[in-house]
Image (tube, rainbow, N blue to C red; front, side, top):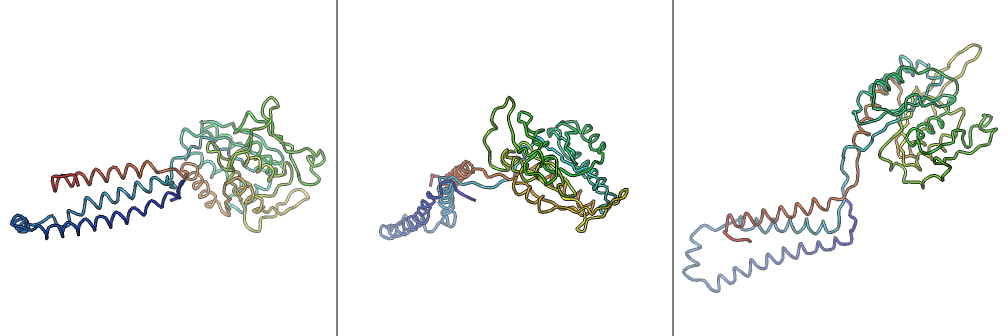
Amino acid sequence: MAFIWPELLWLLVLVPLSVLAYWWLLRRRRRMALRYSGLSLVREALVKGPGWRRHVPPALMLLALVALLVAIARPTASVTLPSQQRMVILAMDVSGSMRATDVEPSRMAAAQAAAREFVALQDSGTRIGVVTFAGTALLTQPPTHSKEDVLAAIDRFNFQRATAVGSGILVSLQAIFPDLEFDLRGSNPRPGSEDSRLGRSLDQRSAGGKPPPPPVEPGSYASAAIILLTDGQTTTGPNPMEAARMAAERGVKVYTIGVGTENGEILVGDGWSMRVRLDEESLRGIANLTGGEYFYAGTAPDLKKIYQGLHSKLALETREIEVTALLAAAAAALMLLAAGLSVFWFHRVL
């Protein structure tokens, strides 16, 4: 528990002072009883006294005082609440390396199966979009409530050459913020790429040429998230870290999933061969920069568990909220209980 006004917690010194005052009053009452003892007091002593019950109402009042004093400091607590997430973009790598079979039956088949299960878990209020990326990125399914359309888009994946992780992030952002224009040509692309020769920078403009809105806190945009899955390294297109920075400035979390085994696999084609290996460092960097999380999937069951876990993360979220009203209500309830017991047992209010 944290406090917005922690400096007011010094008021809690009133609690031990209240205990001392109660103890003093009890001793004073005994002294007065001895000083003015008489037949009536002896008669009362013959009747069984209230015993421990006389201390219950004051104890409840003391707890109410503690609750009120803590409430004055405006406490906050982390609570798990239903998420406000209303859009999820699945950014899927469809480069040729996804043919590799080190994840059975293949990286692509395992990714598609896990994505289908993820879609099935979403509630009807969540819109899902699908972005595929290889040498370029494409919004293959705009965000929609129709699970059938999303599943059909997942089934239509086709292999292409190269891997442009940055393009996948930017096209996903474009789907989330259609009123903003994201330059898909890239900044600091890999040497030798077309974007490197063009020398264009990664930039964003709002519709009509207006300047972009000011940056927000990374991970603060609660209405949408990107789940990016890839099995390789960026070979073309925008610098993925620059694309991630733009997602962070818009507050969008990017959850990254790396697919493949530790040693990767050697793919062989017509007169060529190459080893495909996962760039985990880059994927961790993207997730950390945007406030998301990185996951590694070495097997198909791992991949399914990751998507199931992501569903839980997106369906529920932990937020810091002020609980002053709850403590004040608890204090009021304790006071009413103390007064009620006092009237019931002793026919007086404390």
